[in-house]
Image (cartoon, rainbow, N blue to C red):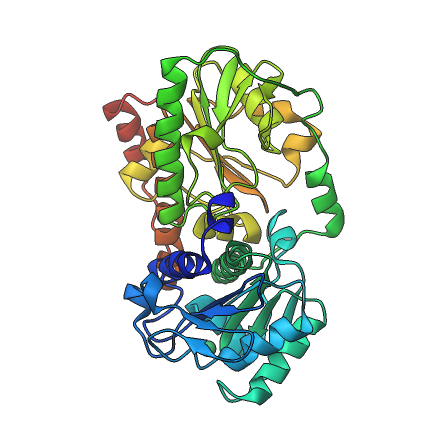
Length: 431
Ligand SMILES: [Zn+2]
């Protein structure tokens, strides 16, 4: 997170626009970003410039006195950026774009419910809805800024798109991508059945601190195996992010180093720019001081302790698998041979199972049942290696995507029991 916070506004805008465009969340012409600096100057993306090739020198500075520096015109939505900064002095960065799934909600006149899983609401806050007005007009500026003035930092614009505000551009972007993930999860859940939403009390239950036994300690030696694993984890976490299996705030990897120690993704670190030194070493009930211990560390430790053959674990909430987890429809992994070979039966557990009785999950998740779903929470994939757990996460999400589409085509015809028996034999799967 700090990496972007310390970047010049020009570079923040270029980096976040690269992510938005790369994730298919804006077109060449749509979308605008701004950062207000400590002198009161606004740095803003230019209008009528290809968003796919934006460079730092394309970014425009609108000075406090109204003068404009830069080679292009500022974005045509400059009026609403200016109006938001005026009404919300806590806001230092604004993001606006037209990502297809949030546009679907905006044209349907609906706000995505962020209570699909336990962390989205804390990222997005409450979500507002601003009435339609002509793009670029002072009237749109009034509608949008007044909606922000109600206290929301994430809003939908009627028949238009989404707008998010934050202390930094990364912070605004995290609201934007999390809301988009929620929208995609809800859309998938609706294709499968009826979405189920959490209550605030369920989120409080999730947020209880269960890491009380872990004490911060600075390790005095580092093995080369640890350094190698930090490097490998970083590559795969960044890949999970670029494949949209993780968001910049959600998705946790852990890798066992030996019987007693493992490495784990920290909380509050941008998954898109994570570095090897950000990863947290956990040994017994000690963890590296000065790092943000993942909230789920106790759960990872419980699984590693119970299952000595598991060396790698990933918790994620990708939008197609989460469609199943939120609709409470059973995902059938007998899709293609690869799905069953890697995923097996994929048992599903009700929300909060691991908080009530951790042994239910730690005695199931194993080389025989390497992947599970926890309803309204997450996908847990395991493996004997980092790449195997990663592959299982990808296969689960892609298979879920395929089955949701197959539903539109008349429904999936699963691989038969006899064909499964042949796969178990041919691939020497654990019976
Ligand atoms: Zn727009």
